Amino acid sequence: QCEYCGIKKGDINKNGKVTKIDAHHLLSRNVKDSPLKFDLYNSVAVCPTCHKFGEDSFHRCPITTITWLIKNLPERYYYVLNNHTVKVDLENRKVLEVIEEQLKTLDHLDLDKMKEIEVAFPRIVKTRKKVQFKGNLFGEDSESSSSSSA
Image (cartoon, rainbow, N blue to C red; front, side, top):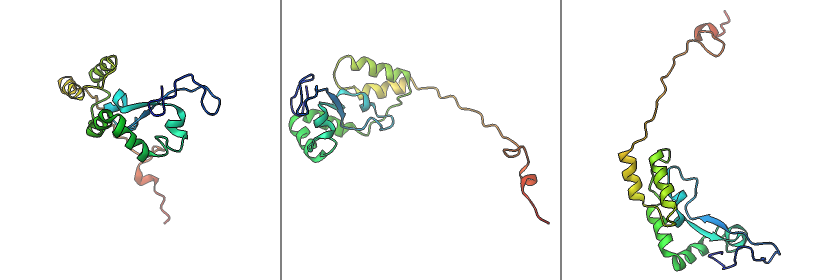
C-alpha cells in the first residue's frame, strides 16, 4: 500500500488504472559506494501518483514530502540524514554478503558491521602493469610522424 496516500496495490486509481507500488529512494541509488541504496530505510512505498506524477509527489514537491517524512516516518528520515555520507566498498564480496543477509531481516542495514567486514576482509585489487608503446597509432615514432616542410 502507498505509505503517502494509503491506496492499496491492485486498487483502481483516479485514472481507472490498476495501482502498482514503487519504491521512492530518499537518497539516490546512484550515489557511489553508498550502502543505503540497498537499505529498506532509504525507501518509501508509494503509488505512481505520489512517487512522480502528482503535484505533491516525492519528485515534484520535495519540500512537502520531506515535511511529511519528518512527521510520519522520522526514524527513516533521520537514519538517512545521519548516514548519507557513509561509504563502503560495494565491490567487496564479503560486504555484499552482509548486505544480502541483512536484507532478509527487513530491518535497516548495520553500517558499522559493514565497515568492520570491509576492514577485516579487504578486497584485493589487481593492478595492471602499464605497457609502454613506441610510436603513435600508425606505428611511427613521434619525430617521423611530424610533417616538416623544408
